[in-house]
Length: 409
Image (tube, rainbow, N blue to C red; front, side):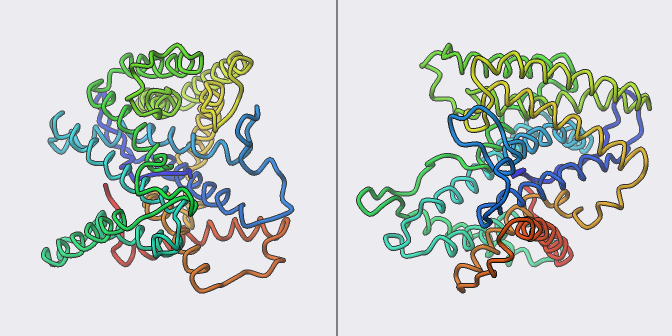
């Protein structure tokens, strides 16, 4: 946040002989999650606002609004996976090419995540760059490298822009110094960042989805595996010998969220192909009730916490996202009210680009010493400011799309 993420096609695959149908509700749900992610990430700038809007502190049993955004985004990544993979298969991609695509996308997310994470703890004096400038340069490089350039764009120019961006990132990594003056350290994965965590969860779920080949039982087995792994990990029953596996996968919870989205997507496709929206809704509600029950059962053992990535958090947030998805589906696809969300549509179709916009905004304000008046940072007015800021990020993203800027991994 949510939260993010990279745009995947949301075209219903021709499974069981069904004609392709565009499922706009997935784009809209992704857009709503990104808007909410930008909103909650801007709360740091406010004062005198309800505590339940923010994150619950580490070690505390409970969640705030901000704690449900990131898991929702992971779940939506899973929702999009079957559509994206089936779409690529229809274009002739083999399993080998699909695996390569998953690996390349994962690497890209890890690279972006690590660079942005290092910006959080940068020692400006030792590095020679303030944090706002570091983030702005990094995000500019991301755009230059992963932008989808028009076919008419000069190939030499595209190669040059990407080469310059890669060289710039390499130089940044070399000159980087982080931490306090008495404990300086060099560039490295302090942690993987939001984008990096999404990358690891995407890797696990993406590979399973590729090899499952639309077998819902294999997808269900994958979700059960990660749900059980989450519980085993928190019960300290996972062997230390497996600690070389990234925690985002070994911990089970994050990959479980994404696999939950894949499973929900398969169920959605099944009932959607039959045109049975009522049965689809009943099934989603029943599954959500089951997930809430699992959250209640597991909470006494490991608590309910985002920062702890507990099983109860996995189950509860999966349920919330499923209910959100079916609500948006009825509104956008069944009742044809998708136009209500037109203003935020770019946040759902160019999500990664939208995620980067606040880095430029904060960087601009800090570099040029721009400060908002206190009235815009306090209470209800402050919350309205943060909400409008999130909407503005979506609008700016739409403008950049029209200028030919769209990130694609």
